Image 1 (cartoon, chains in turn orange, cyan):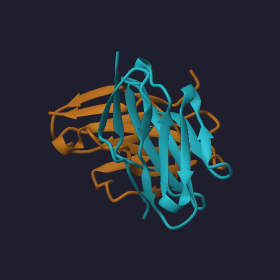
Image 2: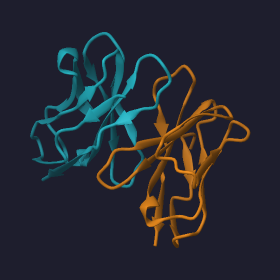
Image 3: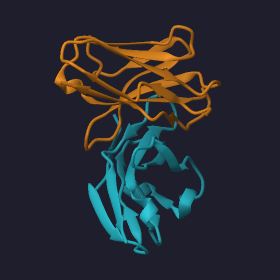
Image 4: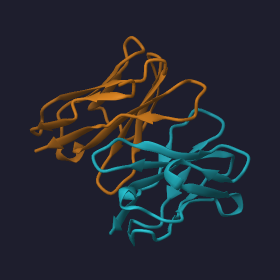
Length: 113
Length: 114
């Protein structure tokens, strides 16, 4: 499978715990995006990378959230001290620098108890 | 900042009925427009896109959408739906210039009943 892959698919955690998600983009894509999707809403932008550089962060991304893409390939999204309001589907997408179409992974569903 | 409005939260149709899902966006400049579909348990997939040229665009699985610039609309249509079209449909917009991220509507859930 050469699409965008995300791991894990589901994560259940207790409030206050830290969680980390991984995204592997399509190999030749140098742009990588993170979105959050809650019930009844469309995906909302969180942050994006061009290669290893994080170029933009949404106001949705509180100080408890951090994302990295250290080698310009896979990316991780970490949430510290999780809260119940963090429960959502976290989506990753990638595209080429010149392309306009983003390709999405299946997402990581986070449930904070 | 741009925004997207999808008028219908949940649409229920019988098989073979015609479908039209509304999408309006707000942005003053030139935009690229997309419809994505999310089948139950699957990832978001591109259904069709409009960048420029013919405002009537055709996508996969018999879907089409019409860009009406004067109405800031990009409605999705299909003449005859099938049970397998049951899914959530998202309209999204991005300015043609610049590197801003996609802005999605809230989605429309389509349920097709036999």
